[in-house]
Image (tube, rainbow, N blue to C red):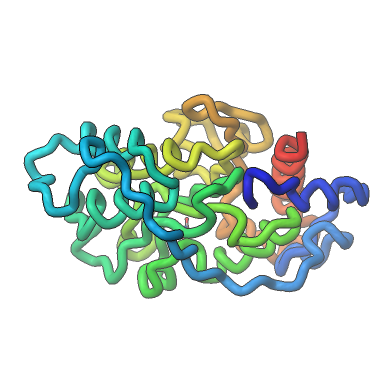
Length: 272
Ligand code: URA
């Protein structure tokens, strides 16, 4: 979604969609809320032609970055006078690089930095890559990712219009929760991604993401559905798609209904 575009969510809202969900696993619920055809996971958006920032502001890839304190480096990337796509590229290639800052790098196949529109008004933050994401280097491409893609489609958006990333960029072994030191090691990268993107809304997916972003221990069942603030940005906590997938046998689909209600609040905020 480009900042210039009125979100197609507006059109959906105008059609008066009320409270029904149809995502795979949401199919027991009345149409047409998530009633879009499944969308194939997107490749990361390719960066537009680079517009080099002023030399004095650029952490040159060939400079000995090892000597520069990470916090300083991250702040300088945020401050660059360059398109978001270029700032994200510099963050990915020149700062995160072939990261070995925590133990997760040892089991990693591919680092999963993030994907989507560098001008996105809406950013989804998940927990960390799973096996599929680790193999492909793209966030949310496995089963949970397919559900997320359909949730995004139900909002009248595509993955190309939003940005998707995770709290930790490398897969925790056996899909365990990321540990405190791992979240801490990656936190600066996530903060910098969000500082560059400056979206209008962040959706925090699940307990791990919301606890990391909001620095709270409040259960996700209590956090979800109520607007929070992250560094001056509106943040809507909701359930993680993996959690929603576990609800498949519940005929009430109550958590999916709650998640859809959370996403509807997001659509309304973006339509303002
Ligand atoms: N779960 C997440 O939290 N992130 C992914 O990228 C995939 C699954």
